[in-house]
Figure 1 (cartoon, one colour):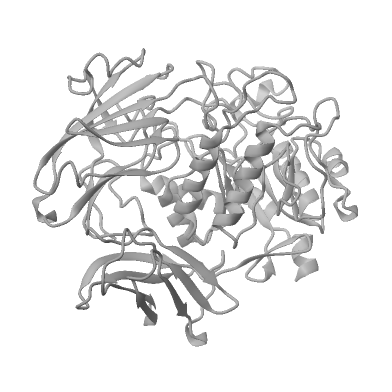
Figure 2: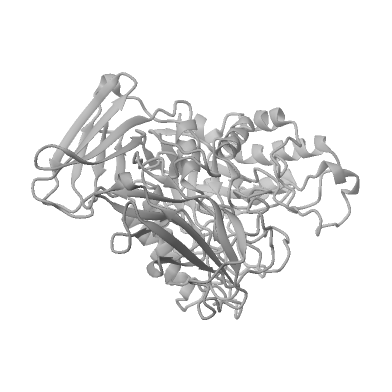
Length: 607
């Protein structure tokens, strides 16, 4: 895979769709705050910006060189560069991994892109503005208002961090980069594994069709070519290819053996010359539902998941290095977790690449918090149409990653049920159906915890932070009678449509408040400095007893297909992680691992 080393976060940002030529634009950019969002009127589009920032780190972070944590209504960026002359004959694409929240991009004073949403990538085609060998000035304005429905994830709506809400992120927070492409080219493919048929199905969207063009795919492993296929590329906007895997080269992707096949995708002209060439990879695996079990490759695999917020002390939502992404997965696996809910954030794609390599199961989720508008309890949450659009961008980006085994567009939406369809009802259903339309191969959970508004949701769940294992066991009992624990409003009125026998799991629990340095104050209430769920254990021994008791309840339930423990690391004042915020140890991880690796009842029953 191509790399560059002159800028922070130099690694290739799109590892499942790799072109050889590219230019990393991370590093020093001009920067300015725009507290009144008046910069366009004040001439910031062409005038000087009074600061510098290190991209891709957000201005609230230490690594950006700024560290301003107040509300930032709008910010501006600028960088001048020369596009490589050796890219001649191709058009140039300018990519942004993520910009929070409303972004406008100008090149040489001409607007080339607008994008709403802080978690998903977007691209500007510079063909009408500039080309190889030319100097360009890139200017970016990012607006990040603190009012109105907006998918923010865990970003705090108060000035300071509080409870389970963290320092805000504004503007560019993932890699900015440019690449040259042919005028007719490949777009990101959809790679669908077919385990039953021992094959891969490919959709290869094109930017356009040209007479005589063909597409070709070559699948290979360590022993060489496995399969190849070609199709005409002048008839369909998205040609389809079929790559059968012979039985003697058949190797299934799993947490125990995360095998990836290499995949080379090519667009050929009428003379057989390669017009566009892209490197990719694929994992052969399946996800299915049988009764209350979620099957991986036809077998029940109890999902021992951990809640991962994806926050870092120095980079906030931006990992300081690629190695930090790898380390988070390895830390979770060392503690006995085989996967994660990627919580209230669309993680950068390189995290999924490492999950694919390391056999780490993940649920793709969205940072939906931010639609709470107050008002009556019957209409208090009002996500708008942008939620659906942003979520579909995330699903489209991540469709081909074998580590993604389920989708969950919403989390802890809460609203009482009544006889009127609300905006939350409409958007929840739209996001569910859109996900099912885009991906028929994975289960979809309409919302994690609280307000299940889609009767046919593939998965059902609940959240509970009951700390006493005996009380916890009594609370979640009843799944075998199709009467599982369901979240309700504080007054007992329902938030969700009734359970209908779907696979069920407790997708948030634990959150044990443990901070060794303040253990002596275990009965105190210093939640401004240290926050977690329930009473803090008096010592580490009590922590381990509680952890083993809570996990044991769920492992022993023959109807439970998994769980998700809160959480992987401390995050600022939220001190309920298995590890500290800086990823150092604070517990005997071997005991955490041992408690989790006890056999699960559903594995024994189904196996």
